[in-house]
Image 1 (tube, rainbow, N blue to C red):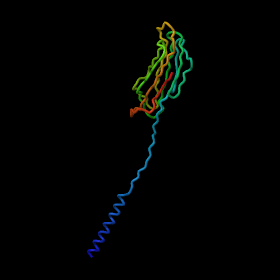
Image 2 (image 1 turned 90 degrees about the horizontal axis):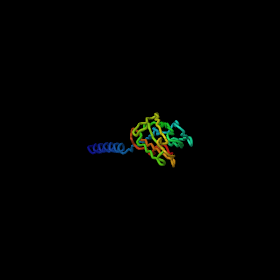
Image 3 (image 1 turned 90 degrees about the vertical axis):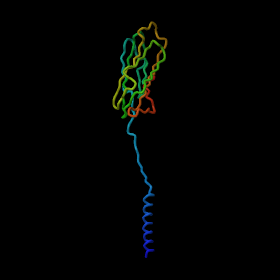
Image 4 (image 1 turned 45 degrees about the vertical axis):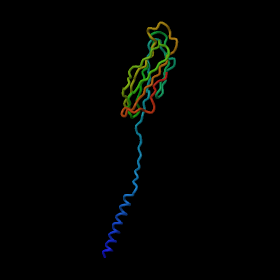
Length: 175
């Protein structure tokens, strides 16, 4: 009888071990998906200009999402054009202007300036910023420029929250 009790106890213990093993050896599969719902959308939204003196557009200014081109003619010292360039953040991510890279080449008698925008300025989602690009024939010039002058401006924006560089720099103008 003791033998039967031992056999029954061993069978019950074995049953518990089989059930326990099967519970512990079950694979756990977790599946899920995630979607990026934020968007990046900094673009030139408008360009207007004012004229002083006999300055004129050789060609009307043009712009795409991230590039602007203008070609200004000047005739005498003091002639100038001021372009008001509006940049809008159409995306859902806030941005910060990391760097303004402006390079020029050509005649020293034609002066370019950029005002109304600074590095580290913020451009929140849905907001716009208007800044000025001025091209001017030097008021102190005593002779005509011997060449054209080119200005290239590149604005590099970062995501504000993460301050993580975006894969694509934002180029504003190629003149």
